[in-house]
Image (tube, rainbow, N blue to C red; front, side, top):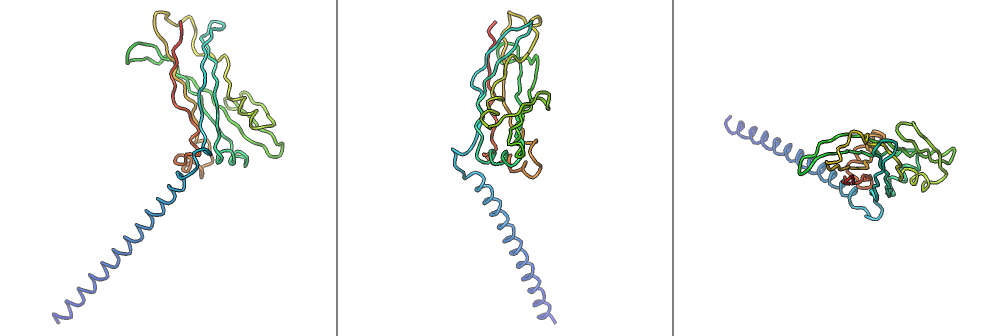
Length: 210
C-alpha cells in the first residue's frame, strides 16, 4: 500500500511539472510573438518615415492684437500616405502657449490651439482640408497643395496688446501634434508604437520682441 501511494504521488508531480512546462512554453511563444510584432514596427526604412517641423515663427501686431505667422513642413510617411489615399483622415493640433516671466518660472497667459485635417475623397479625386472642425474647409486637387494649405498659419491672434507689459519678457511655445486619437479605433494602438505614425513636431520656443 505504501509503495502504491508513493507511485501515485510521483504521477501527480509529473503531471504538475508537465503543466508548468506547457504554460512556460506558451508564455515564451507569446513573448516571442510580441517581440516579433514590435520588431516589425520598428525595423523600417528611416527614409520612409515622416515627421513635422516648425520652420519659422513671425510675430506681428495687428488691430490691437499680438498675432503670429507660422510656417510648418509636413513630411508624411509611406504608411500614413497610403492610409490617407484609402480614405482615412489625418489630423493635427497646433498648440500655442504664450508665457510671461524670467528665470525658470514662466506663467502661461494663454493656451490656444488650431485643429487641422486632411481627407481624401476618391469619388471626387479631391483632398478636403478642414480647420477647426469644418469652420473653414477647402478642396484641393493634389496632396501637395493640401499640405501647403495647412503649412501656413497667418495672423493668428494670441493676446490683446493692451494686456501686455512691455517691461516683461514673453515667450511662445509651439507644437504641431499629430492626433492619433482621431484615427479609426483599430489603428490607434499601432499608431502609438509605429514610427511611421510619428508625425508630430517637438515643442519649440520663441521670444517676442517688444
